Amino acid sequence: MIRDRLDGEGTGHDWWHVERVRRLALRIAKEEGANLVIVELGALLHDVADHKFHDGDETAGPNASREWLCRYGVDPEIVEAVVGIVQQVSFKGAGVPDRVSSLEGKVVQDADRLDALGAIGIARTFAYGGFRKQTLWDPDVPPVLHASFDAYKKSSSPTINHFYEKLLLLKDRMHTRTGKRLAEARHALMERFLEAFFAEWNGEC
Ligand code: ADP
Ligand code: NI
Image (cartoon, rainbow, N blue to C red; front, top):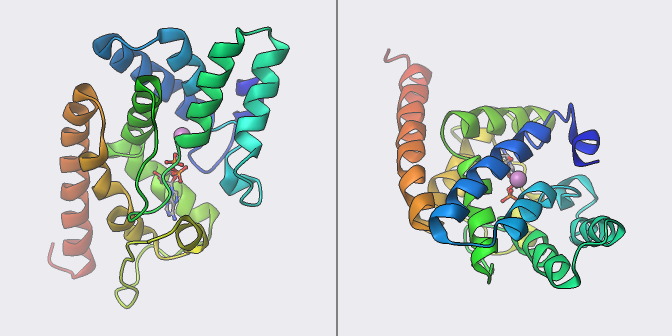
């Protein structure tokens, strides 16, 4: 069902993103001693009806998840834990604090964010930028550290700005030890990419 819904999606939120998040989340969950059933279901459902593709509706994802879990007869306590993760997982702006409460939510959020970093993160960012028809970069448009989710949602700044508005901030917002360790290497790769991007932009290499 999840695969059918997301297969072929072209903005970097496709089935394979979900599969990578599931794999990473289970790896982190084992190291952190989190509940594997809740983590796996949370990872599978975390992007099932993202607000970005549902007119900003933040209840679409949690509602679709609850409906799906109930239809398959999942234990009500697990349903609530998973729906809580789907509600809380999304990044809402540089100045908006994260509010994931459970260990399982922290694990899924770390895994989702790791897939926004490194080589895959760079590829996804330009895929999304193309979908939104954003420019690559514009030296006259500085990055903004959004203070509210509303401001973050409405932003249509150049794609390079997304690195400064979100991606380079994620390393310091990881919750788990494993997440922090994996984020370091992916962060360093993005810094090298940006260095090369600007050097080429300026005709220096
Ligand atoms: P979250 O999973 O925390 O809700 P998003 O779904 O907003 O985060 O972002 C997932 C990925 O989509 C980002 O890491 C990035 O690759 C891409 N993305 C989201 N917003 C933008 C943007 N404004 N410009 C470029 N890429 C973006
Ligand atoms: Ni995601």
